[in-house]
Image (cartoon, rainbow, N blue to C red):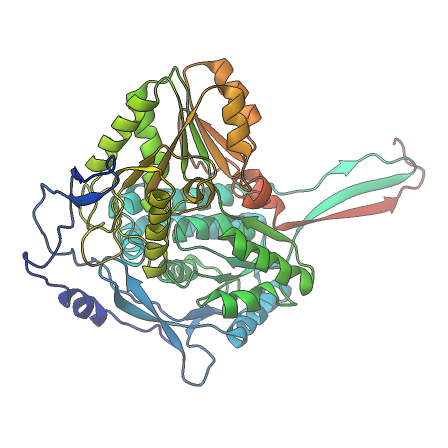
Length: 547
């Protein structure tokens, strides 16, 4: 069945948003803060030096909203072809109605993946032939970069420049990287005590279930799909219900690249229904999940209670960003700002605990505040905008609750602290100083544009405080002293430590966490291990010339 065409929603949803200058709040700003009483804890308003402008009409049509199962775009199995809404977070308006999966749809997808693995041409292809399909897909990503970036921005709210200039090139690069691995996966031979020939085979694990999050839909698609296909597996992927559109578009590009039917199946729906059905399915051989730690626990339990399928988890974080006393403060402020505010703060490894040495603390706070006030918030389709809206109403309200908690805990609100504008899920860039380790804003993953700045005295103290958390996903270190960098990078219990940089995500660099930030690693050679079984083959040797 042909994919639904809903391009008419473009004009309807965006023409509905046409406010007069008197009623609409500005969508671009270089903020200034007007303090009330209480040491700047009351924020009265943000100024602007940008004119009020209408929202940009996204330069793309929404063409694919159905499930991709066995090479066909199909409606949900339910009698009424059940759908759920996809939103534009700039306007809070519905832009598409997407097929909603339940257990029956997941089962259809798993059966298609199983048949493709057991009977289809995919496992019988040479590794080189599989790599050519991945390379053709990467070429198609380059060709359709503008459409994919526009869909990502429209459905997610991230700046278009970020999507088009950083994330889409990374998407293509990741698939080219895994295409290069496809024909280099092999086992070993090893000596044994006695007359035996021993070898290992690295075999595809089978049907991989994958559940991706909403903050980086296309990048997470690549992190999951790339290594699974390179290893020869088939896939059932569930999109995040907030951001289903780009994965479906990518699925269509894989068809154009020559991927056989049933190898990549994509369903959309909610976690308690579609996600739970996938995690507990008895014919899924492996599960990969990226999302919150709380949901990760549920996924792990469902996998264990079904067929004990292996699970990799990339979960939450509360990453420390440590600014040492020898730091160039201006450079440290800019990097710390990026580490926290990138992607609207909706990044699992965000540097959300900014530890600053007491000797440079006051200077850092003032400059961090000034940088946050210069941050350009607005329509993410406009050039120069650094921050778009949060993903949805739930996340928007959650961020504001944490800001309120910080104020009530007597952290000093330096700037921000409220929504930006009167429509859309925009939040003012917010900076807290005088933050203590026992405050919720220093303990919980906020997933929003809220910077918490803490003071420390020495390395031993900051290592201990940084590690006193249930998370261990990443950390940042800013120093000019190599000995300090070595001490911190070895002392911090985190899966990634960035020294004088942050959010460097090369295709070859493994990513994953300690403690409750997850199980296993993604990207690089380590990710291949998630999708392979190791088989030992032992045969006797008769009168061998050598052993």
